Image (cartoon, rainbow, N blue to C red; front, side):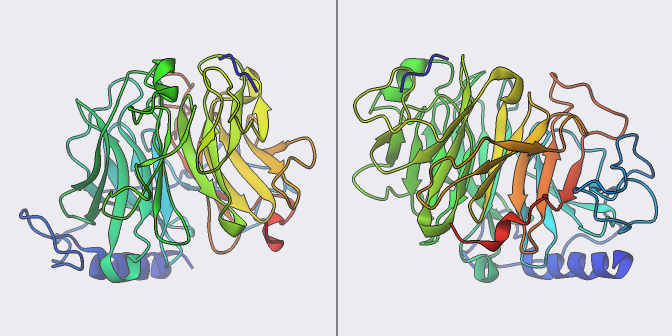
Length: 387
């Protein structure tokens, strides 16, 4: 198809666990399983949830966990951040969030304990659409404690990995970067291989260029080696801002179009998402969103529902699929206009969504406590049925 276009105690326990398991190495790099050193002594810098929020949900709102917190908005678990973009949920139920422009990584707690600053990823160039754009946990995280990040440098986009507090080591380099359509999706598949989403850098022709890594979904192993003859898994993408995996290894990409509607695409090996012009191999979108509902920035799959963070739409879209991965009904939405521009969405083990706002990105209108990290239970209990 053509597309023109428990509070304090729990928080301290989780922080202690992270310090023991994820403490970084020294300046000489790292071994895959260490060595580790203790976190620096002294109280860490903190950012905390607001004491009040003018956008707190009212009684009966499906996003309100009803009385989980004495004051403020119970959906807001951290505030005062600057463009939080990458987010991963740790095995202990806390999350690590990365700021796009600063490269700071902070541990955020579901009980709204103050967030804990962990480290800053160096060497990032945040010009244009660049910065720290995506985070993922190593598929063997419990053994190696490694984080993967998609970052922009002055010369390229790249995937790096590091233990918390350690030096980022390159995994995949030489991904074209640009002031616009800079990509940044990361997700590990069930088999431990890594999918990487990129943008066309504002040059639409690169999306169909087999010699370029721009405008593609790439498939590599944990060391950055291609899975198959080359790293290109699918072509014809304008700007892959997020990737998510559903049941039976279904892979989806959010594509932020240069013009026309944004799309949720099902990604298949050898497929073509159809940008800038659809060819015979084009797979076509699962669903399209007009400009007022677009600016797709994140996706997560729960059962047969895909949740999409929408920047311009200022909401979380809910996309219901049938057993074959085809759109089953018109998309719904929640959190509409409640927190401003919504970007990353990540599902945790309890069925809650972690959502980041993006109101300090130069386009949004920030509130006093922006940017924020939310944790909400979506309406409908969509995580009960396998896709």
